[in-house]
Image (cartoon, rainbow, N blue to C red; front, side, top):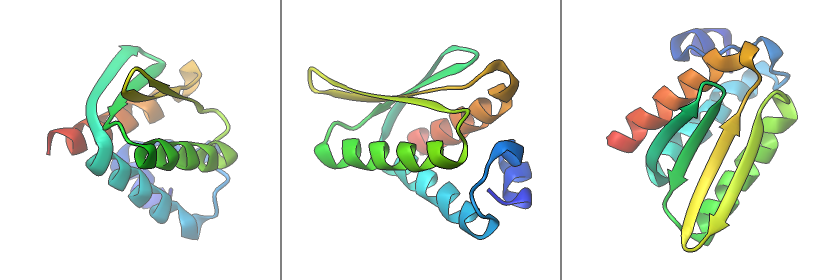
Length: 115
């Protein structure tokens, strides 16, 4: 994420190794996933976020692919995609020192889900 985008979103990109030019595109990809697929946002722990997604093979593939690419540049994220009994969820966990990143992600996903 770019410095300005990061500040606007409350994200902490200092640990991100994604090239600066690609960072706004990644933010847009997350925004699109949130707008298209997020049904509910839960923040069960300070360091863990759960996004309930619209169940479909396309959303599962999209979330998995985005999570894998994001983990490649921000290795502090732990993503867990769960497909079970007709439901789809993406869990995101971070170490305590990156809670502000997770909080910003939760806020962004929640805004998209309620729009």
